[in-house]
Length: 144
Image (tube, rainbow, N blue to C red):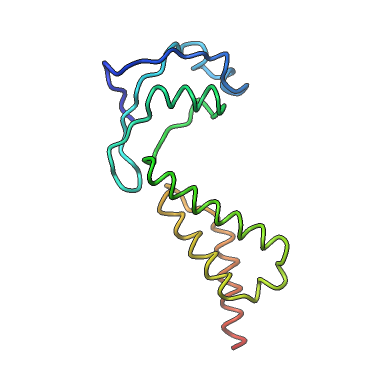
């Protein structure tokens, strides 16, 4: 990510950071935030992690000071929708695992969402869960 000289800085208050952030080397040296320009990892759109957004992220939301944006706001929103849907399915699984392990539609939906999420992250999330779902789907196909 590239810091742009001349962007409007915003005063930083490291005292508002998370406890972990206060133990970082950045705590000693950060006095202001500046806009950070980057390219979205998913769609390659030019994006900006604004100084104002950084202040909110690190001082109000208490996110890790080492956090860096990789998704534009549109892709971030889409990934959050996927995660919310995945959380719903995971909760359903926790309550009704015995019935849902034979529900092919449920399993396929869950698998599609897990695969879909991979478009938004630079790693393969939940590989073990995907393997489990694939095994359950394979077992249900053998019974047919």
